Image (cartoon, rainbow, N blue to C red):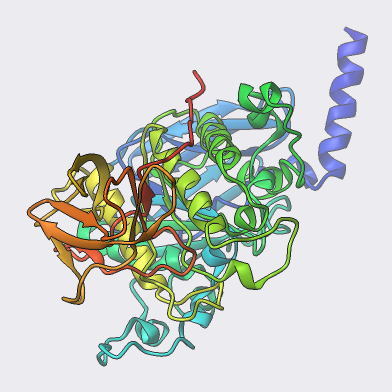
Length: 485
């Protein structure tokens, strides 16, 4: 009994000295004014206080109470709620009372990755306007963004582990807060709010130049047998950003994840190992939130001259296609989706291409179709299989939408063909219904075909719904086996 009393007193001292002054209720940074709560799902509300203290949470007609545990932590879950654009107050009471104002209920997504996801709206404002732009160009979005039903939260390496007595992390998507926010994430949220007609909250947690490893805990990698079986050491600070920028967000209720990363992996010359790292990431995050079905939609990296740079490997024009192939292989992981960006770079010397509004729109199409079950075309043509017919290869595709098309009306580009010798040459390619026939005069007995198999490829092969085809090679040696979980 005396030992228990000593431990209790010591815990109380620790809580007081760590900032829980006067044993007050303290909330994590992610809970604050202006936030959006996830609709149609239980909503955790949590924090710290003095062990044994009673905490009461009130929101609209709901009242939940709990007792703080011996470690000073508490959590309640609000019952699932329908969407609501009517601002409401969330009240948390213990020894002190906290009132969080202007709370909405709708859809919440977390976006993460490296610089192309971090790419801020202020940079978007400096993009050269496309020739087809109008007075409503997305380049000018900052000038008119003031939709109170879109809320944003920017995670940084420093802001998540310190309590914020002002509860000011969330903002309406406008002005200075939006200037510093992810452009791809914002345009995803804008499109989603427009199409679903409910409030949308978007959380951005991205770090320029980051590899995939810091976003996954070491336990996440340890759960994938591939690395141990192939004696692959996980370096690159595993878990660094996971601990600082992902874990503190959980268990905030959200609908799914958006991911834009891979350039760093391409510089390292990764192929199949990156697929398994994506599996580790996806499983790791889903486990943290306790939901194996959380959607994970990601961006296949855009064309860029990797061969113009220097790095730890020798780059060829195929280095990037092979990394893209590894990204595409991750589609075997359930509840995932990938968008293509072969047409979204107007300068192949720029690893940070513009057109983030289109990245956001294409990610939203994935969500509309696969999460919200709306009847929309969400993907460009995806290679299905091939047949050899004399001196031609007949390529069949999924996701043809309203039909296959040359986007600019010119002959199809970036198809190559080879015989048994593996010597690939430029191919003539023609759309025949929902197939593409490829051939070359110098290849009498074709054995394999490739599409967009170059870092510089910006092909014109789309479906009529305006979405570009996924790069591929029919002679794909990459084998990915899902880890049982």
